View 1 (cartoon, rainbow, N blue to C red):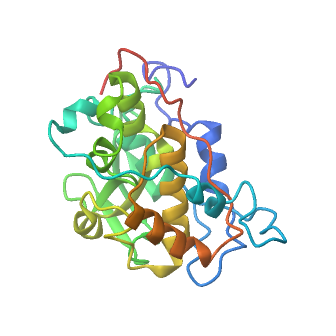
View 2 (cartoon, helix red, strand yellow; view 1 turned 90 degrees about the vertical axis):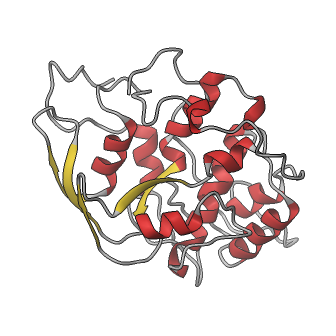
Length: 256
């Protein structure tokens, strides 16, 4: 636990589990392998596929094959605030989730005097486009994207969750990535069947991250989505399923 900001003004640390998730290597991917960077959800190679041709346990492909398949429920009742205040400080390190993710994923970060607000930095490379994107607070071309969109989760199980689980989902570093704002808005609330990053080298990492989040929280997939995820992961069958992030239940009270 990082001391409250009143006693520490330096950059808050990301939980060890998150750093482990972001640091995983991608040696087992082929053409669609994600870049070896610090983005949450970056994955590593496992032990390979079994001799029978079935995906090896521990791989993202093995996990996606076992995700439950159901139809998409209506979006009725979905509102952003059903997932709690945006960027709540669920880990109680004194800073909101958005600033934690920016500080962890940007390079050359500058902060405000409060030790929390990220004022500037560089996203290099942007995972979705493969380009260099400059972040300037208040004039940002960088968004914090939910790998599994909140409304997508709502239609695939989250409407049945309690408030604490939805807050945890919305602020879990395993489900968050800093990305080019234009690409993020093109994605919208799409799943893998409707949108994949233009940066093909990140697709394995992207889909592995979505798989990890859906498995962790019990979010189901449609058949079209599962097929699309499987097609991507067939190109990197040894890619290990990412892990880490926060507990799946956030504290009852948290500040933004």
